[in-house]
Amino acid sequence: MHYLHVFALSLSASLFAEASLPLVINTWPFQDATAAAWSALQRGESVLDAVETGCATCEREQCDGSVGYGGSPDETGETTLDAMIMNGDSMEVGAVADLRRVKNAISVARAVMEHTTHTLLVGEMGKNVSPDPRTSCGPYKPSVEVKRMDEQNHTRLDVHSHDTIGMVVIGRNRSVAAGTSTNGARHKVPGRVGDSPIAGAGSYADSTVGGAAATGDGDVMMRFLPSFLAVELMRRGIDPASACKAALTRIKTYYPGFFGAVICANIQGEYGAACNRVPGFSQFSYMVSTPLTNNPLLKKVDCF
Ligand code: GLY
Image 1 (cartoon, rainbow, N blue to C red):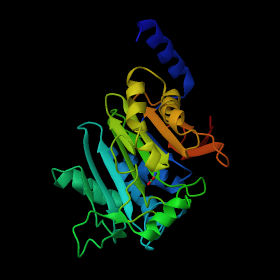
Image 2 (spheres, rainbow, N blue to C red):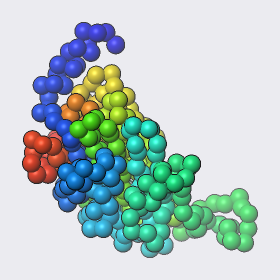
Image 3 (cartoon, helix red, strand yellow):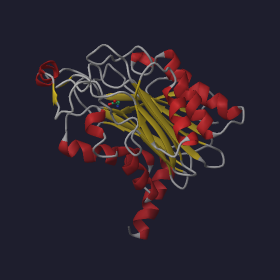
């Protein structure tokens, strides 16, 4: 990129948002999660601790029923959780998907990161296919019942199911951590995993640049790694709001009607968000906490 262009972008970025660190930003008006992450930072805990505490708050409180236990049952009526956490200093990631009978998925994700050599662990799979995987090796096909659900294009994620907490925390020392937690799509086929536990899709953190996190229709969004793309665009000097928008524009080219939003923040303390305008979704709410806001601040962005 031409130096003058980078300079112009940086200038517009510095004019764009009041910048201050540390910073907590998360999707949707999940204020208690923001406050919990902010308190963790005030107690001197790490950015990873803040992300874990913030997302765990949402899991405990079942934020809008779209995070944590009991919400978004799959076709068999069971809730499964997806979560990830990323350390932007070391680029380590821990993630879990299809997790059952555990409330704090984000903490399990962190345990995967810190106590295993793996990145993503998943729970039970393979139900609702024929032949029955308990008695046959396959090949498997979706059962008739599952096919019918697909053919009806059953609503699984929409603007009323807020869908995911995605959080980025940037410390005063510019360390970045990001995380997500969700109970996924309603009436999903058992075994379905969305974007939330996928690094670069659900969220991404790089302490040399910043972080991003996504919410929305994970089946579509995970194909484009919007959180990774947004961080890479910020690396080139693009301001957070424009980076979020560009990451969604890539998806919109192929799926104009997808439901989704992205939050972005850089290590200068600038932040922004973007959302794809679809019927019933013209504005996206997110939360921010910085030394300038005092309390968690509700922000809104008009979708494009
Ligand atoms: N964005 C959450 C999901 O699609 O599972």
